[in-house]
Image (cartoon, chains in turn orange, cyan):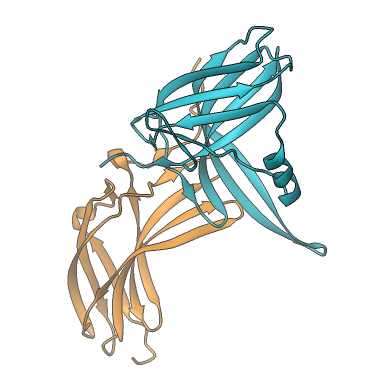
Length: 130
Length: 163
């Protein structure tokens, strides 16, 4: 690949980024580069973030084989059943879907919510109503 | 959950051991009172959790015993200093669900009970990271009047909602 960085884009079907655990995420990954990247892949990961740092885990990697220099590639992936997106007092858990070009690891990502009821679980205390 | 199987599909939970290895060894070898045992069914969000407990308190004056399921956020931070690296943990209970509460007779040497609870409030399953975690425990607390005099936690793994 030449020195120019590839242009990456990630679109989710209907712009939807909120899902039930085990749900299916559909979308289109697109890229444009002077030469065909060595590899293109989708990475689904979660982060458990606290004051002292984060725990991070790749839940799934979906390679998009034999990429051309410029392409629009539809994709469909199934989300894991857990962990759930949540917001607590000390911690929060977020999901991210990234499109990654190899070998330079250029990437673009979108945040996802993965939780029962299609909303971030709020563990923070509810304000007392008078 | 770990430990021996008990009747009625309950499993004995292991107490949470805190402190250094000397304190943990002492706690393991300790045969005196108070001494608690807790048995629980599988813990799963949206499903009923059944718990049985027993506390041998001997002659200690105890007026109240409470048993609760507690979910806690734990955030750890590594702090570097010239003397080395230490880890400081912040803990915040996000949900406490009462399981049982008893007032032992003054002459009683042992108390026991059972309770059930369904985790329907906003909650998340157990999640253990290198730095951060969501932990759940059955907490047994013995008090003399308003003052808690003895507390023990028994770790329980809470699983996701059944598919």
